[in-house]
Image (cartoon, rainbow, N blue to C red; front, top):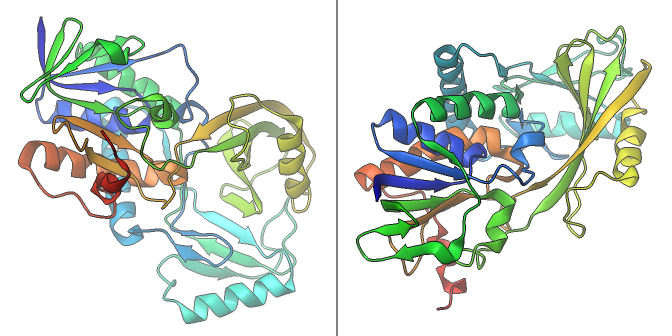
Length: 352
């Protein structure tokens, strides 16, 4: 029987960053990851943006999580000799005069000067911006697939990774330990993303998963380094490649790319992109979003050594570093979890 401190199920964004934190704390960890299934982390756009939406909403906890995640990702890059963190910032050209007035009114009403600058008309070659737009700092994107690949290599080197489909019926839970096949651990943490909906221990949580699709396209002679967002967005990936995205669908939860989503994205891109492009590939994923748009952290109501870390949704790259560390402090030092993230807020939905 192999004895561990923690079993982690899933090596997506949540599972990877939590496992990394626990290994840095010198805990004995084993990740069980089903490599045969698609994951949203593998196709994520990975955008982080402190100001979002049509009403310029400030991202929840932005003043805390953005400095924290930047420090985390830069330190991880240095440790792994990899470049996956891209603070490109973001430009939002005004779609019309009405939107320009609306955005200017919002920037006056709310204290957004820390993150937003006003850009004069026609400052960007290659996109339509005759009215100017908003420039958002502290924004960019994380190459999530590359980061997860590098972390998997780190986990393999530490003998902390095992490619295996988790079988729920093989899990035995007692007050002191959890046992899974030939493994025994103090605690088990499920970081399964969308697949938590199939987990009999946590399927009662109010997930609200959303399918999203993105495109990879080549744009010749396009030199804008920022993310450009006007209904749909363009992320510069390098080597003339760019990611276009994305869609939100709640009623067709599968991993298949559709022509309808492709057309929906391109119809918005064509409104502001002035350069010719060629679509190379299309990808689909299912985001583990939640009803209240807050993550799920904490222990099962009936099993105090069974945990979940999930529900990071569309802001996963912004939330994951901070909340992985918060969960570490809870697990190791019994620090209280933030009420807005603790699944205790939904215990009333659980029935034995």
